[in-house]
Length: 418
Image 1: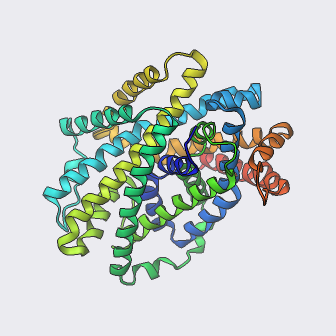
Image 2 (image 1 turned 90 degrees about the vertical axis):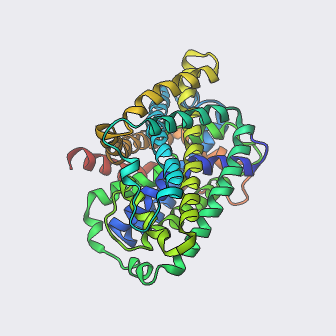
């Protein structure tokens, strides 16, 4: 059990906030303009939050791993728990690769940073790099060292999240004062993007990705949430912090202009340019920024590992730590292939194509499960437990049972055929 509401919120924020908020979200903002933020907030309120409340409520209602909770709600839904765990495993594998890049970027920025140096030559070699491999091994060593129960997780996440988010907000304030007219130009609406199916796919995929939905993390953490705590308040605070960090990263990202934006790769060229305006403080600020991203990324990997391991513990029993070590070794082997050359290209495909598709597909299945009468009544009761202002059942039905599945189904068709 989490020792306090703060521990649950910080652990959930640690799982939700990461590379996607600071690399992918700003890049999508640059590509689509201010329209992306408007639609993102709309989908967050009408799709993301109801599903987030549902996942937390599912975990607290049945008190077990994601696979156990889905099977408890409906015996036929057990495979959905496996799908969530598989999503968590895929994401944590390439998240560790990104952690490796961000930490090494922080280290190398102290020695090689200049306004023209993008770090790309060092971080993305075309051949084997012992330094990158050592960074990946260090990442998994740190994850396993932190692996433990809810109380341990809450304490570690609280320290790392407060440290990282404080630095990011400070840097965003500095960037806002040095951005000139770039931020004002960003607020112009480009209505043509609303006609693009990929715009809607990217936006809704980012909502799910940012909140760590469809990976079993919130179900697992919900099992540790005290029955007296408000699910609506906890979920809303997590979503607020998540959006705030994304917007802070966007302020930093667009402060240098609207140039090329490819997410992962461009983040190691755009951010160094953004920090060059700080003069003598450029080097320490850039180093702190990448360290902050690394800490948040590590929190996410830890959470995804706990979710991925939950399936095997439920199905095959055994010691959770031993399963964690085994899955870490498998992920380490797969991740070592993604550090350079074709492997890095595969990581980018996973980030842009495979993961969004899997998450949207899983989201559609979750909506079908949650809107069934028996499951809906159980989840709404858990969500509204102790609430002075309960979530209206009609709103939940329209959101989870009609609006969300309709949008998800349309996006799924677009992904397949477009």
